Length: 241
Ligand SMILES: [Zn+2]
Image (cartoon, rainbow, N blue to C red; front, side):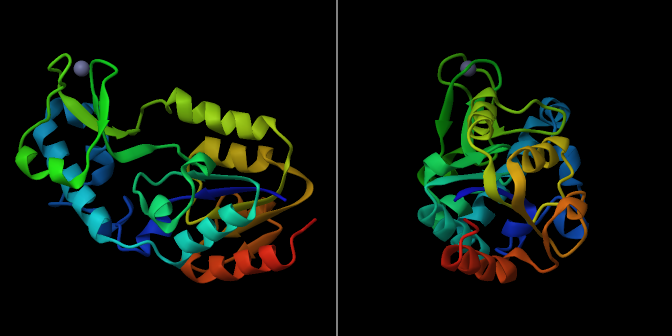
C-alpha cells in the first residue's frame, strides 16, 4: 500500500493550537494572518518575534492528539508513506511519525534562520528565556534572524518541495487522506489529486466541505481526532490492495 496524508491546522487545533482563522486566532487583537508576512517582520520585527515566542511556548505545552497518533501508526505500518503537513508545530514528530516520512511544507516554528544569509539553527527550550523581547541576530552576518516558517506571499522552500515531488514522481498512491485542512492552497489540492491512481481512495476528513470534497471517495464530516483512529484501523486491518 502506498499512502499520502495531507494535514492542516484542524489537526493541531484539537491539541489547543489556535488556527489563523476566526476570533480564536487573534493575538492582542491582531490578526495573525497579518503578522505572518515579510512585510510585518520588516515593519515590526520585535512584535512578530513576541508572537512567535508565545506560539512556540503554547506548542511546547501542547500534546499530540489521537489524530497525530493515528497518522504515526499508519506511517509505521506503511512502507511507502508520506505525510505532508502544513503545520509548523512538532506534534506529528512527537506522536512518532518518522522524520524521513514527513515534510513540513510551511516550515518548522522551532527553526530560527537568518533573513539575510543561509545560516539557521534549531532552538531548543533553553535558548528561549535569554532572548526574551530581543530580536535574535545571526552569528555569521549579524542580520536579524526570523522564524523558519513560510509566510503569506512567500515561496515554498526548495528542499521540502523536492521531497514532495520525489514522492509524487514514484508509483501512484492507493490511499490519499486529507485531514483538518480546508485545502485553501492550490498546491495542496493539486498534490492530493496528482498522487492517486484510478480507483484509489481519497478520504476527506473535515467538519466542513472542502474543495476536495467533490473528488473524495469517502467524506468524513468529523474532527480529525475522532475520525482518524477508525480510518487508520480500517486501512491496517483491511488494506485496499
Ligand atoms: Zn546571516
